[in-house]
Amino acid sequence: MKKMTKAHALVMTIAMVSATFVSPSDLHAHGNENHEAAGISLKPDASEKLSTQATSLPDNIANLGGPFSLVDHSGQSVTEKTYSGKHMLVFFGYTNCQIMCSLSLKRIADALDMLQQDSGDTLDKFHPLVITVDPKNDTPAKLQSSLGKFHSELTGLTGTHDQLRQVYKAYGQNPSVLEMEVNTSAVVSHSSYFYLMGPDGRLQTLFPPVLSANSMANLIRKYVL
Image (tube, rainbow, N blue to C red; front, side, top):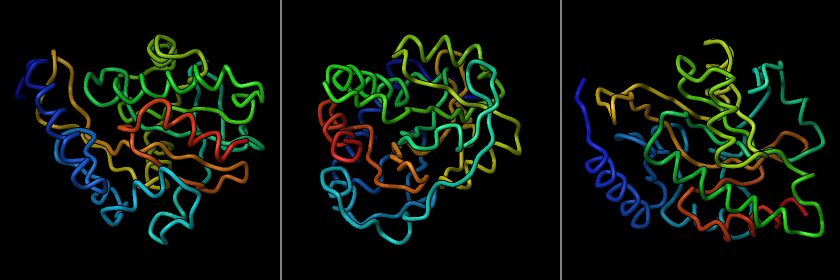
């Protein structure tokens, strides 16, 4: 397996993020996978529109999401009904990720800090979930420890191969292990949108992790409050 230094990884990340601003629909998480490859195909300006205003979702993403049966980072079995009546903010990632996941989770953690300052108890109305794309390494205990370093409100989810395959399909994800390493850790390719699901379990909007924490917080407020 080809090894990649942290410096090389940073260069690759900058290149990927730069490409995002040129064409938001091609936001890369790792390697060469983009959102179109994962079943999410947006016109060049669609991602920005979805991220800044309430609008009708394109047909190709309106039905993303669905039932799931997983295990949370406390070892408890959960389903979509566990969070019934609340919005879910769903992100796919993994604890050994040293590139986009860390950047994404730091931004959403900062956004959560902003939301905690709201007088309207915004955080009581939605639940941020991180579903692993690396179940081989991401045990519930490891998810709890890793995500807790970002924010106490983040909940990690994992499951069996079949359970995860079902939720990957529902959200248009197609994770795969790449032939490279960053600091001896395998790199897993996956799409890196945040999915904001309504209390009814239906997708309300999605947005890329390159948004600022303030933009993320404002977007969540728009749908949750």
